[in-house]
Image 1 (cartoon, rainbow, N blue to C red):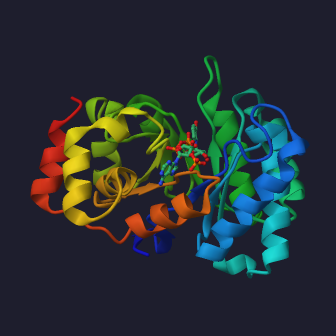
Image 2 (image 1 turned 180 degrees about the vertical axis):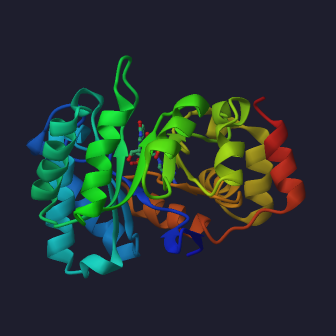
Length: 273
Ligand SMILES: NC(=O)c1ccc[n+]([C@@H]2O[C@H](COP(=O)([O-])OP(=O)(O)OC[C@H]3O[C@@H](n4cnc5c(N)ncnc54)[C@H](OP(=O)(O)O)[C@@H]3O)[C@@H](O)[C@H]2O)c1
């Protein structure tokens, strides 16, 4: 596994997303066995960064993640756990309450990273960061970040964060270059903010793209691995694919070790523009 080191913290280039673990917008315990199976195989394969949120399955994803980690028996210090506060909880009291609830559901006493899940019209970022900074001072959270923030909001968050803002988690993939076009990627790379790419392989056209197919064939890997390697080859970029399938989980993890050449990066950079 390759790592990105930022603000003296090492974080794997590939982590594990937990959207759809335990349900979607509400808890769906009928599927718990499948969800726990996916988390156990991810832990077994060596994933150490897990991305979750109070929003995922209305908190049930955090419950299952905590359970799988306890059952697996890996030391807390070996893991990097990210969770997120939902936009309707961004006032001071609710930020503190949401974090307490996430920790309780996970069965943990700190989060490695806590993010504002997405911005809300009319939100008072000063108030949110008053609570978020307090969580860091109290040792409940190690690093703070944001998600789905445009450049203007990102620079505001950087200025309000008492510690270096760790990440902006955004949609970024071969077919989705929004963060290139809106300046977010460049800002992150120039200002030591990690860019965490979500939905890295979600779009169907990953599979049908001829450039991806040609590179995958020449490297003896899958389209999905090339799409992930295109992200992880970039400085200051990590990604968090999600899969229920142990074979896919293993392939995704291995993609971090695939370093694409400048020519391959350029070829991929030219497609889907
Ligand atoms: N901050 C935000 O607003 C936000 C938004 C969206 C997502 N996220 C986070 O980012 C994570 C990842 O994003 P995502 O779940 O939207 O999309 P994704 O990881 O890009 O795609 C997941 C889908 O791709 C399939 N897949 C994964 N690896 C594969 C492989 N090697 N070969 C074939 N199919 C593969 C999975 O199916 P199988 O199960 O069959 O493998 C699943 O259907 C989420 O779980 C969540 O933690 C954050």
